[in-house]
Image 1 (cartoon, each protein chain N blue to C red):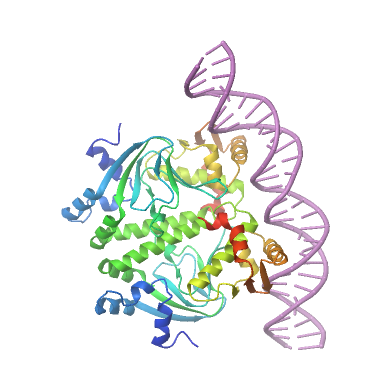
Image 2 (cartoon, rainbow over the protein chains, first blue to last red):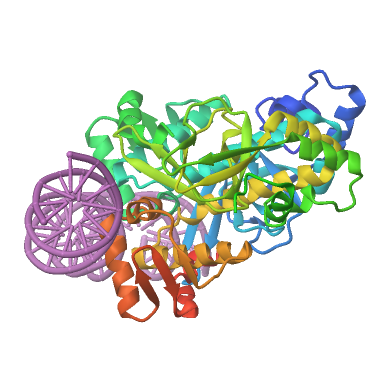
Length: 240
Length: 240
DNA sequence: GAACGGCTTTGACGTGGATCAAGCCGACGA
DNA sequence: TCGTCGGCTTGATCCACGTCAAAGCCGTTC
């Protein structure tokens, strides 16, 4: 099915979107909701490797992922790529660009990606009239601060990897996907970069988890066999 | 001089505060400004070691530092303290608490601290009527995402330490203090925790910087002798 | 189907920074 | 004056993880 087509599908997506609670009728008068829906622009498809935006470009819009997976990354002075995050359906991209008014990172599709684009000036104007939207934006921004601080702690490779798997599964579950069997849409190298590890270390730790019966691994397909065991390993990271 | 006394001083502080541009008359009608000033509550003094708020407490207010220095920190499962940030006069505290609606960290005074307290519900209500306040909140939140991502990169001890000194100096300069001579209000252990290093490593690197003529160190008093050299060392961290 | 290139795994080895241990110094209280 | 306590420094040692190297695997191209 093509998420680019049809309002029925859009509505279904909206129930899992970060904006869902304000986009969907819930106490607002129809005219206000109409305005929000008018403001949303559906974009895509993007193919794996396509740039959604590039570091340094002028900030204009934030995006919600409708389908697919997006990675955000920066290239440092020495040309090394650092992955900042992975964005699943229903999650927002671009909030960190508000302040400098330029995107501070590249956003790159990992597979076939569809987005909802929200013009930020229009959205914040609307937010002054719809407090629910303002609240939601505050919450989304605040949550991103917490997320950014997560991987900043000094944790070892085991803790990082275990927490990554658990958090990834939890986010999938929150969107209605299976929390124990899933396919990683990113390469080992991307995971390594995100966790600030070497790709070889990621590979070795996954093997150890497999040998210990915590997970099953088949290339990029993962099955979590002992969620509690993983959660225990990653507890320092997971408990804020 | 006691920042707790006198409106003249308050006004002087406001010119360097994160909210300064909206608090100070600038196109707003007097009634709206009156409302913002009514909403601000001056609190303090706090003494070194006092908690401003504790992890897990219900979120109600954000704070601007009026005088002194504040550290924010979490205690993980194993009882290890991790410093999340240092907050200088003019900077905001508590923005990351909006989403979970509870403070995710402790905030602790490092010296004598005075604050402006903003009730967040009142502030966000006011923000729907004063777009400038809404914009400023969006900017502050967005900037914090970027700050949190800074120390998350995989940088070595030299890069982290150099970037820390430069950023600290820049923030002091932005508030009108000297950018080359300053006193660190936090212990070596706090710096180490913030940079995810061991205290011994911080000590050794400061000595190396001193031996290389980059800085002068006298206990907690620092003088930057070669700002460009330090900036060069920390360039990967500093350039986003 | 041969050849290529990117991704992943595995093993061998090196190292940056943590850990351990000891000593120094200034503050503070008796 | 002394003891002691916490913060800081310094040296010796250790180890988790990065780096290097090689080989396997898979999809893609011609």
